[in-house]
Length: 245
Image (cartoon, rainbow, N blue to C red; front, side, top):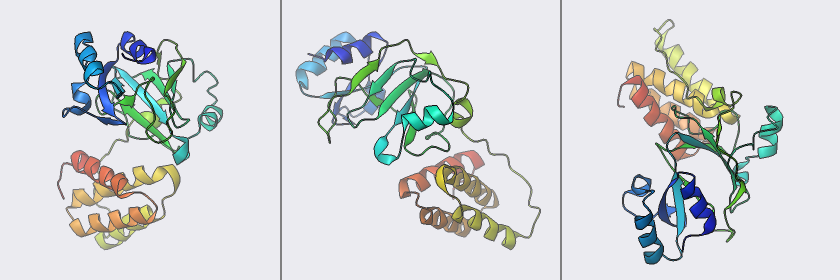
């Protein structure tokens, strides 16, 4: 049997799929999630103790993880958003939040300027559904606010929208400019590190200098970004600047 709160998410229009902990069981990953009840019934019989992941078209989730510094209270206070939870909101098994909003545009991977807050959309990922058990804490994900999913607050829009890269001509000595790009990345702090790294990599790729790309990546790692974050910045820059390093 599917947990009643998991069933509630299906009733709200979420496509579901079985998870082993947080990892999709099917080879197609979240792309194989479905709203088909007969398929979900078979999953429940075949994987009786599985968790479930879910996505819903036109919906994004603000994923607040306190282990990585995410704070719902700080977000609400700093943006003066006392009604932020007037939407569908889930308490995660780690004590964090999944807060759902209607938004169907491209989004960045993290909320700009806020540590520990990821952004997930139905096109690029999924969230663990309520009724599932957190693999580390053993605690349930549960529905905290069963409200209709609200439109994304306008205050969050500039923090959600991905940065736009605009090529610019070389106006300074190339060697000096190269040093400046690396220095800019090395001096970046806080939530702006990813955006600055992305910007610098776009500039380096525009010039076609692999050595400069490598220097920028090393500088970004030196600021505390993980290898995964730096790789994500590089891949985004490659797509945006139209070059492959």
